[in-house]
Length: 246
Image 1: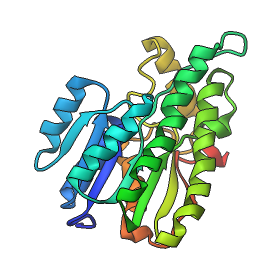
Image 2 (image 1 turned 90 degrees about the vertical axis):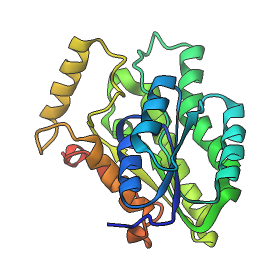
Image 3 (image 1 turned 45 degrees about the vertical axis):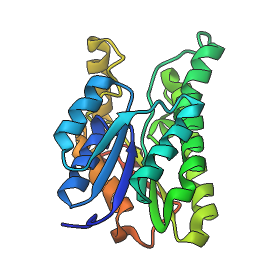
Image 4 (image 1 turned 180 degrees about the vertical axis):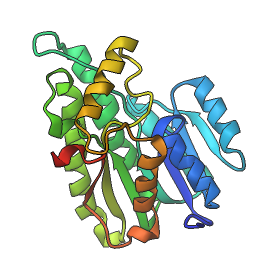
């Protein structure tokens, strides 16, 4: 397929996981892609892996200045046909253990970051462009250990719906990607034994009986970014192996 010929797509958090998988597929479909990350090693590796005219650079969504820096770089690169707001991170908490620093750090990266990024980048989006926002099944799971993370991802769903309404006059579509248990670095903060137990428990709740791949999640994001989804906006697309069907 060549759905992205002559199109420019920006993916925040695109140096690993589903973001990188999506960038790879965009390149294979003749598109130009820019990816951001926070780890210098992964940024360099992504640039080498993706090749061509790919831009890969450091940009921390938690830093309020980063959105303006991102917009300045994009302005030099060219107008955008697609924007995938994918950057974010996960951590666990308890009702008694959460403090202001923990809460603020996650809200700044996962919610304020995308809000400021879109505010700064809106003028660089072509009319008819597409935006994908990465949320999660966490808001629907009700797990005791991920309350703050779930709150950030629930906020993104609400933002997606409002952004879809606000940008519709320009023909810009906005949709949320809702990944379930996907192979990625998102759970790397957990000790290995805890991570394996978490994933085993997750698999037990998935009708398809396995963890999804980054490519499977990216395929749905790219559908939403492409003209194949030209009449889809304000929607949530679950990529969870049927997890939320139960």
